[in-house]
Amino acid sequence: MASRLLLSFLLFLLISIATSSPPLLSNLKEKQTHLHFFFHDIVSGRNATAVPVTKPAAGAHPQSFFGMIAVMDDPLTDGPDRNSTLLGRAQGLYAATDQEEASLLMTMNLAFTAGKYNGSVLSVLGRNQPLHPVREMPIVGGSGLFRFARGYALARTHWFDLTTGDATVEYNVHVIHY
Image (cartoon, rainbow, N blue to C red; front, side, top):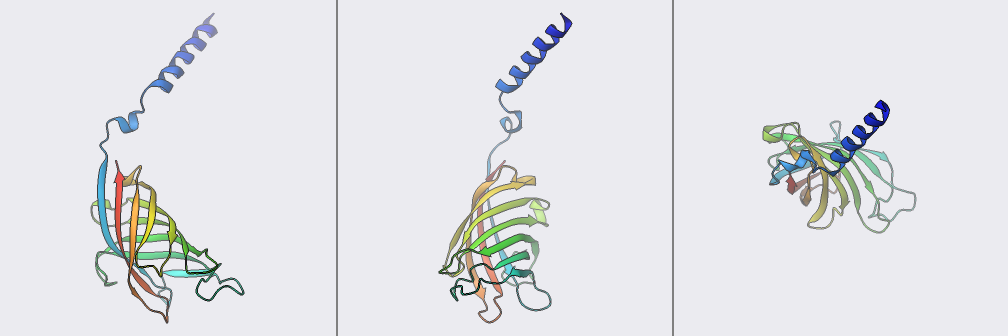
């Protein structure tokens, strides 16, 4: 009898929890945030911030770099000068995934280390065609002040050195979060 009563109580509790609205988002207000910063991808020299871990595939189209994968820990700054105020780091990897033209699969965390968003992260996963004037990549999540984030990042090459492969890219990020 006691076990039947306990089972009935547990079943009632489980049904109550399953049918109630999620308390996590019910009291939170959705926010929209615009972020503007510069991404510095340095692949040359002793202080490289992006390191290739594979070379392009043998016989790959010369403009595609197909098969190349690089790991990055690139600084994010408030201005185009690499010595401007450090806002955080772009940490992740990019892989050349198109056999015909330069096109990268970007998977990176934008980890902020300064200001209001210190300790917060935005996650980006998408296609980046670096030779196009503007690229759009999705924001697929976040943490800290960017919990439940979704949105997009627009990337524009600010500076690119054909000899070294080093680049500075301007980012405008629009994100909705709680």
